[in-house]
Length: 104
Image 1 (tube, helix red, strand yellow):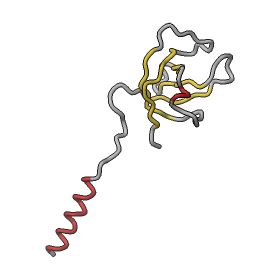
Image 2 (image 1 turned 90 degrees about the vertical axis):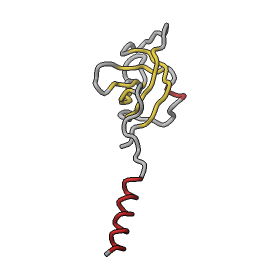
Image 3 (image 1 turned 45 degrees about the vertical axis):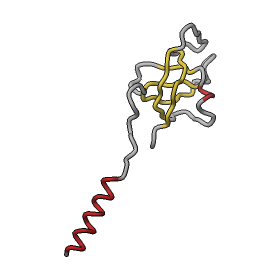
Image 4 (image 1 turned 180 degrees about the vertical axis):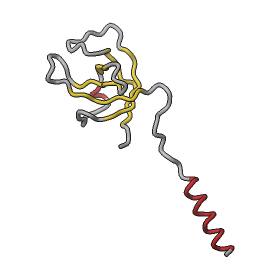
């Protein structure tokens, strides 16, 4: 019986000591979905915030992604690109600082 108790204790200890992946990144990231707007004049891929309040037009998306598709979800850290103009005009022009894919 004592051996059984020790085995159970070790199993429980092992289960709860495993490091869990953080689902929500640190402060400063925004939950976004990549949208393909290439059918609109002057548009390409943009980020839609998941609260649907705004769209974000990245000027450096190619620096972070090479293989992406419509509907991909990310955690995005960005800054507004001051003095930039857009032909698409669907949202703020941004410079990506960090981009992390969301686990499915």
